[in-house]
Length: 179
Length: 198
Image 1 (spheres, rainbow over the protein chains, first blue to last red):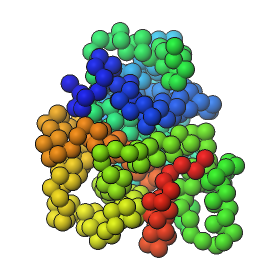
Image 2 (image 1 turned 30 degrees about the horizontal axis):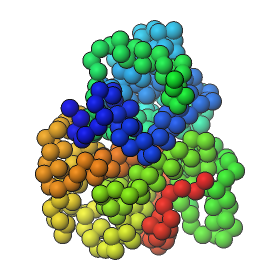
Image 3 (image 1 turned 60 degrees about the vertical axis):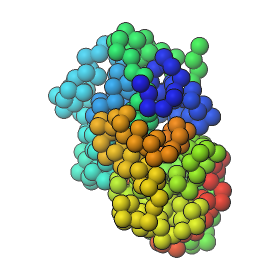
């Protein structure tokens, strides 16, 4: 049961958005530019960061939906995003993405946890300041989305197929222009 | 003034309201908020943040903008973000008309001369900020029993969530706390005009 009287049967963040559409509309536009806007990090990499942070925050809805979105940027293959969740240092991703995930992991704990060494490692693996910044931005944004969704206790479907379909739409249609 | 940790970001403000503010402050030799550099860097992204922030903190609701600014400041204190704590403490002080109360809440809300319903609300904010997975319906029920309606609870959660974003973005990029005077000035501006600058 949601903690407050949100629209019934609407999953996750969408019920909160329907409760206050005028406040919440920018949240979807933000997701669109953060995860699908022009960027040197691929959308798959950015969705992987989003899923990873949501997993660390134990936000089931955000983790399952962004996990599926990350997979659908890779033709529906879940192995990479799941390997990152389980142990990103040994996951089959680039050294640069591993270094950026290390930054994201620190941001999830708290912004003050990020050290110069974390930033230097990312630079040494070829990340630009912009990519480091965007990783911080995405990780911080999911510390917000996760609290929004779980603080309100929105409806969390349990059927994996629901998330797979959701992730496919998130990856290929995006967050704003929904049919 | 201290520079951001990511020099490429600070060196590349895009044209717009924030670049204008930065240029004006530099020309006048006045201290300015380095969050402007973050907002100026990717205007297509930050425009949505400004609008969301303004809605969350100012939209008419059964919880006052002053209490929402207090939640913003308290969340920022818990996350050890000096810049956000001082910025929103100053805005809360303006809107609530009580600087001493805000300072005492930030030191310890349990000891501050607050009404009980606000104290209960701040305990809830603390739980969402510091231990989200443990938050349950029972926590929300305590807030409701203290006299807050669903709309107020929605805005409290959303404010707390928003500052869990800002605090991380701000501290990880190195936005420095300003002087008391500069924060007080900014608090007056935020109280008067809010957060939309596009």
